[in-house]
Image: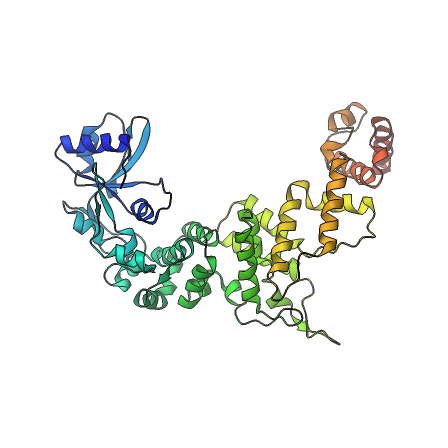
Length: 450
């Protein structure tokens, strides 16, 4: 493994002090695979006190568990002492940590064979004590030792197995998957934040279907995403020959293939989950109807994201796309109608909404190319944007400061007036002049007082 000059110099400090330093885990694996990974993990036979004595600038990152951050040549390096771990009482955290002098013992506590490589420093010689190279060649994710023990120690490892399946496109070995099936319920002991972190990496992986299937087959999906699990085998009928679960996965794969933003990938996976709650018997040629499924899907996604403790911004952005993904444009729309649409969706969300619509259309088995009217609608939106007409309150030729100057007090009434003025300007862009807006604002203010 090629070692940078700074890391080689870092290792030399350890060597001169009589200690060894190794690079371990994902960075070594990805080097073998030819993938880029600058997230380095180091391990050493030096104990935390020894590390602190070797370097002038250190941070006690997790000294109780043997981790010290060394600041060397302006770069932060997290270095952890060889260790073994005591019993895991909560399926997540060890009751105790014991420092050892053996690299072999340290590597035994890691999760999967493909993550148990080490590279000695500074020479970069790769050490493989668990046949990880063989599993890399066969594209296999295999727990080290007894899978049940590994997952009992840390339930999050089950999600990591599914995540690696997505990121690397590897299959999970039979006994490892069997242990996941047996212990899937313990995933509920893991914090929502850690589950979300692994799930998002899975969704953003190159083969999300593989990771999602590992979650579904093991039962983990029932535990953390029962709403998505419920879509498996759910028939949609009509133009959909695929089940709802297959449709959602295909939509996500389209978003991946087109390299759409993460917000769109998330919306693609959850955009129709509300169909399970809204399906009703249709009439005539329609086998089923799903009226309001866009709204219900957004509400269910909101609940999922709150449960997973995502940021408010991410939750609101994804739900906004899902809530509006069923828009129906026809060529007879007026220019004002197009502007109203842009206002409702938000200029910053237009592209993502169209990306979601393309993913939705492409995920229908036997689908046709993107409809001409969608392309035409995109052209009309672009045409309106090029005109630079007012589409938000900040685009008005009058603002809150001017309204205050003409006698309108700040507060809810001022907000209502600005909103009403924007609606009028969207209907008739010629109204966006300061003289008209001042007179109209005063009229609206008087109406509120009466």
